[in-house]
Structure formats: C-alpha cells, structure tokens
Length: 537
Image 1: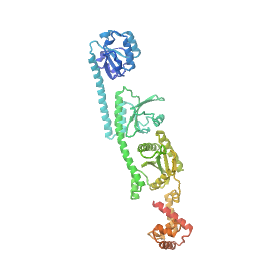
Image 2: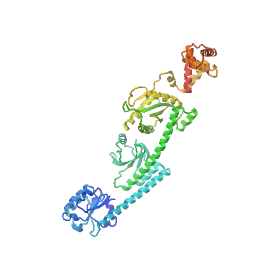
Image 3: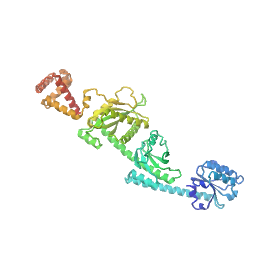
Image 4: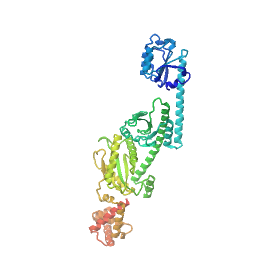
C-alpha cells in the first residue's frame, strides 16, 4: 500500500505531513516501533517507523542521522510524536528530510503507539486480503475460460481488458501462439536476444525492457511447461513493483496459461508418438497391405502419390568417444525446434523420429528445377538456425527422389547409407547425398509411370506372356541371366536339378522363338525383370 493511500483512510486523514510531501508515493510493506536507539539494523525496505522520540530527546540532532540512514534503506516514512518528548523538530532535521523527500508525519500526543500500529497493519492486511480475493476470482475466471473451451485467445483478450495493456503469447522462438500477434512487429532484435538466451534470465519471474526506437516498455513473463524452454507472455507496458493488482492478475493468467499449455503439450506428445509409431511400422514393413498403409497415411495427411525426398538427421557427437546413449532430451528439443521452423518456413515437409534419428519427408514438385540444390539450401538453413539456439549440430543423409510414399522405405535405407557412408568421424553439420552404385539405383531415378510403360512394352515386344502362368519359366530365365548363363549355378540358386534348368531354357527358346545367346535379348530381359522387382517392391 502506498503512503498517500494510507493517509486517506480513517483515522489517519487527520494527520499532518510535516515535510517530504514528494515522498508520499512510497510503498509500505511493514510497520514497526522504535523502542531502542539501535533500531537501524532491524529496519528493511518499505518499513514505516513509529516512535515517540524518547531516545532522541536529549540529542535531537541525531534524528538527522536516523532519517538519512532510513532513506538509504528505502524506508517509507517516519511517524513521530513531536509533542511527547521533543516538543518540536529542529529546523535542520526538516531541511534534510525535505531535501531527500523523506516524509515525516506528526502523530497526536493522545494516540497510543500500539493502537496506531494495529490500525495501520489492519488497513494494510485488508488491502492485501482484497488483492488476494481479486486474484482468486481472476484465477477462477481464467480457468472457466479454458474449461469452457474458449481457448487462449479469449483468455488473453480478457486479460487485456482487466489490466488495460495489450498482451501476446509466443513460444520460446517468438512464434506467436495467441493474443495480439503483431505486438512484437518491428523488433527483430528480440529474435537475436532469444537465440543467445538473453531475453529471459535463468530462474527469473519476469523481465522488463524498453524499445529505444519507440520508447515503449515491455514486460515478459515465462509460461513454464514440461520442457526447459518456456513460452513467453509479452505485456506492452511496464508493470511496477507497486502495481499489485495488475501483477497479481497477470500472474494468475500465467498460471492458467501454464496448465493449458501443459495439456496441449501432452496431447501434442501423444499425437507425435502415434505418428512416429505409424512411420516406424511403415519402415519396418509391418502393415499387411498397401490399402492399410494408404489408409494410415491419409489419417496423418500424407499424400501417397506424392514424390518425396527422405532426409535422415542425426545429432553430431561431441567428440570421438561420445555415444548415442541418453540424449532423448536433446532430441526432443531439436524436434520442437525443427517443427517450429518448418511452420515458419511454410515448406511442405513432414517430420518423424525413429530411435535417435530425425526423419524429414520433403515434398517434391515440378517447380523445383534442381532437387539437390534445393535440399542443400533448405537443410543448411535448418542447421544454421539450430546452431544459433543450441550448442548442437545436425548432419543429414539424403535419398534420391522417392516416386511415391511407398518408395520412402527404400529412400530411408538410402538416406541411412548416405549418412553412414564414412566409417570414421564425420564433419559436424554435414549433408551427404546417396550415390547410386547399381542398376537398381539408376532405375529408381526414373519415374514409376515411365518404368511401368517400359516394362509392359518389353513384355509385349519379347512375347514374355507366352511363358507359362506359374512363372517358373520366366523365373528360371531371369535367374539364368543373373548367374552369367551358368546352368549349374542357376540350378543351385533355384534348388532344382541341372536337367530341369536345361529343359526349362529350351522351352523358353521354343516359346519366344529366339536364342538365349543374343546379347540384346538378354539385356532387355534382365532390365525388364529388374524393373518388375522394383515396381513390386
């Protein structure tokens, strides 16, 4: 309670201020009486001292030292009975008190010091009780907003009405969540402060700063969640220590926001776990059919007939002896960061985790001329921004273009091979693209539509449909080609007798009206069968 407010309450309206009128806006937190000359060690900031001046009656000049020391301790004021023992205050005391704006207030001689202290404390406690009751009512109102499903925007709008200051809620990366989303517009330096951890000091309950360009003050409150990175509630305006009602109201809003954000984070974590389980099962090929995978993918908004680039990211080891054993906390931080960045960049990309890996599925469209250059610039941007917020680096392995969602299984294997292509220590923040080493890899670079057309054309041209329905002749023919036309090796691979292989090959020549020694024919056969395997996979 401020001193000037206290003097408007009965019976203190009849008191006269001897000196220090400009100090009446001081806060009072406690009231104490002076019953000994060594009172100074027991005084604290915002204390109101009441005395009869008995210990100063023979040395009234010492009152100057008392006033000066109380001012240094930031005490509120001195209530004194001048008529009891001192009769009058020396002029020098009044001059000093006036210079330092320290209030001295005269108490009537017939007032009891004990009753005065009790009355003062009663008024202060009544005001505190009223503030606490207001805080409870405010907390109840904010809680009802959330329980009734009105959302964070309605809560922050109500908070703005109560404290008459605009507010906005952002995450730790200053991405707006609710409230006045353009409140921080035109202050790019805030992002830089947040990157280096200077915006909110550790264990601080709030931070105030002033924009030098606009001369507007802001107050920031942390909204704690289960993670180490709290959300931030920005209030456009300074909230002073003496603004008890505004401070209590804001603190109640912060408490309710914290619980609501905890609830949202729990839902988000559950959804994330379900998504990751689906993707892990998809990579491990545990689904029974394409139809089941298609239905599951559609549930998570993954277009099946979309081309993708699969990028596998791993946190770089801190040193050569560092192992991936217990860094789930860091992985969650990186996941949250990348999720936020992907939203801000508006790039069609899907994020998953599997074990200690982060997996990005980047959608590819016809507008991208150079896929590798696009992926490189995109991933380098993520690496750069990540290194600014955390003392972590991330390396990626990147696959070829996957012709559909079903081809992502192969793309994941390629990305893994790319990031693990070096047997030793890899450079931090590196990007490795999968390099094709066989014909199957080259064929995967061709769109599925073109591969299908080529396969059917080859089947028709070579009359492969003339072979029997159980595919034993076609299978034997392909294995014969793969085994460098070695009959014995072919029989071994098919687990049949050598004569059976000879019989089947002669039957193939008869039905196809060609010799199996024709190099052009064998090339077409092997290519078509490789394409068939790729399409079936």
